[in-house]
Length: 105
Image (cartoon, rainbow, N blue to C red; front, side):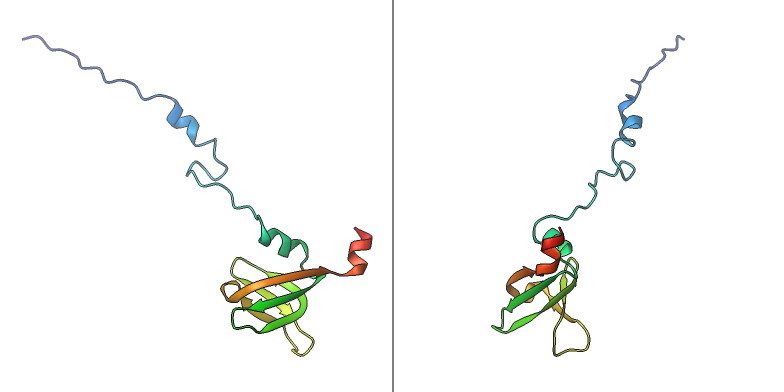
C-alpha cells in the first residue's frame, strides 16, 4: 500500500504583517479625529461668545465653556454654573471670538 502525502498551501505572510499597519493593532478602525463644527467649537473653547438658537425658538447667549460629541456648555450671565445644551436640540449657533484673543493670534 502506498501512501501519498498531501501538502497544504502555506499561508501568506501578509496576514502576519497586517497587524502592524493599523495604529490600534490591526482591527481596521481608524483613529478618531475632529472635523467640521466640532473642531471649531474646540478651537474657540473658553475664548469666544456663542449664541445658540434652539429648536424651541429660545436663544441662549454666553461664553463657550466646552463641547463634546453630544453637548455644548455655555456660561450665561444669569446662571452660576454652565448651561449644558444637547446638540440635537440646536437649530443654529453663532460664534463671536473675543477681540482680545483675535488680536493676539
